[in-house]
Image 1 (tube, rainbow, N blue to C red):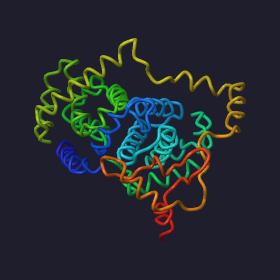
Image 2: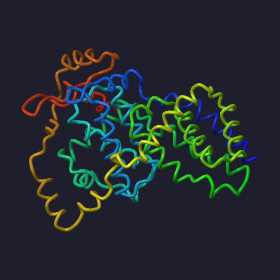
Image 3: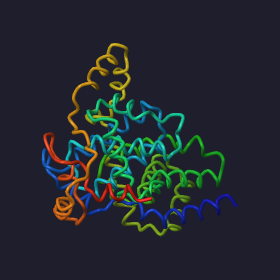
Image 4: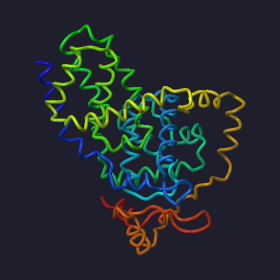
Length: 330
């Protein structure tokens, strides 16, 4: 009965996953953006996700919080054209939202603490208003179906067939491998169900378990995942794991985060936080609506653009008037 229930839940999540995928046109635009250009490049995005991984570890957030934060980030930047200097504010906002959505109330850090530890130079007010934009642009669809959703279900299905595989199929290891994949934007193009099954199949192959392989193949058949898709993504996941395991790979720097909270460093951070932020403070008044309309046409994928709506350090308003008019609605 438990296996049947899990299979039904699996099918239900499969039907929902398409609603939480980042726009592929936006992801392709990011991948084609040159470094030091006007838009967010793939390298810039990947570096920011690695920072989120470090912050997740530092604050003791769950893997679910990290995976959801990455999903929110990718969906947002694939929809909106953003200048690189605002990516830090967006990513921290996504992490803060994700921590609240996953109901980690006892662990959710204050906006001030997130900004201080991440050493980002924007204000609490900036972060709060950026979070409002993220929520509105994503239509408050926050409880996303992710690759972690499927990874947990696949693992539970395998355990439901026998209780002797808990120590063999290590869920913590699979979660760590998923986090490593999410640090590369290419995996944001994969369907969560396929990415999770690719991770599972590679681990099963390493274990050389015929029984587990049969279960994974049954899951593939049940979800109607094509062999071509699975082979393609399994190859990319395998390559990612090999590169990530190599000594040349620069992994998220957890030690740095541990070091910066020493007493002396905390005092330095306090003085840094008091310095003038690089990010312009968001004004309270509205923005020129015609400029917002012009900027939204600049993105080749047809989505709205944040690049002009964020203004410059010296002048310009932060958010389009349509954002604020929406916020005023009851």
